[in-house]
Image 1 (cartoon, rainbow, N blue to C red):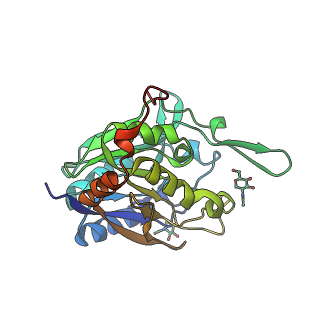
Image 2 (image 1 turned 180 degrees about the horizontal axis):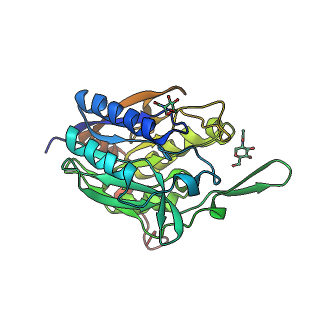
Image 3 (image 1 turned 45 degrees about the vertical axis):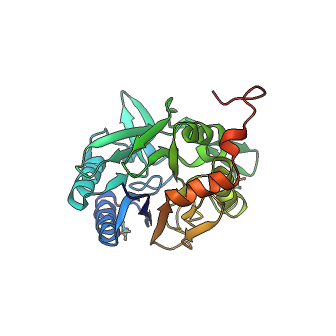
Length: 273
Ligand SMILES: *[C@@H]1O[C@H](CO)[C@@H](O)[C@H](O)[C@H]1NC(C)=O
Ligand SMILES: CC(=O)N[C@H]1CO[C@H](CO)[C@@H](O)[C@@H]1O
């Protein structure tokens, strides 16, 4: 199996009309596949505006309209497709859920956001995801044949332990569909990707929706990919765009040899279980 392959990160412009946006996503997936991408990812909440008041209205069962459209896009284009996330309804509860498809269109993973974004700064800013959503309780790794890939959603990137566990399980690439806002975006979006990449000496990519200035929650955009040396190797500004990045596992192994963190851990003093 080739040690280098291309991924595509789709910074989709998401608005209120679900059907048109699904069609738009499918079109961009096919464009990315034609440009040689083997793994393609959509952003967090790609079929719905981001906000607790929208989740009940846009939520779907899995399988449902949005995930069937993803399965078809993966199969038609013969790619691994990471379906960003959608609000999922299951048994009366809502989740922020990412589904993953193989090139035959079969769902091979389903990941529910683990850490919900609950912020309340009195008089300033309030966003309480847990008003509408329930948390997921499992970590998610899938194998592509190119490398193992770990998934987590948005706020989850702030919890270094998840990335460490994914690294321990042999991942070469971590994908974080996410939507940081206009404050946390410029402050933390890129540095968190670099931190997770450097700690674990692997590739990290974060996939945001394009910015919509008229939305109630304004996304920072800046979908990007970082290599195991901590360098940004591809990035968008805030408009709709497909970001391509080449993942080179031979390079990853070189970095791991140059700075042999993996062999020098003091498991007698600390351990991520
Ligand atoms: C973005 O979120 C942070 C809390 O995580 C909050 O302090 C800030 O006010 C928000 N910014 C905007 C522009 O909404
Ligand atoms: C990216 C994209 O095609 N977005 C569309 C989503 O649906 C709304 C409403 O129909 C359109 O205005 C957007 O252009």
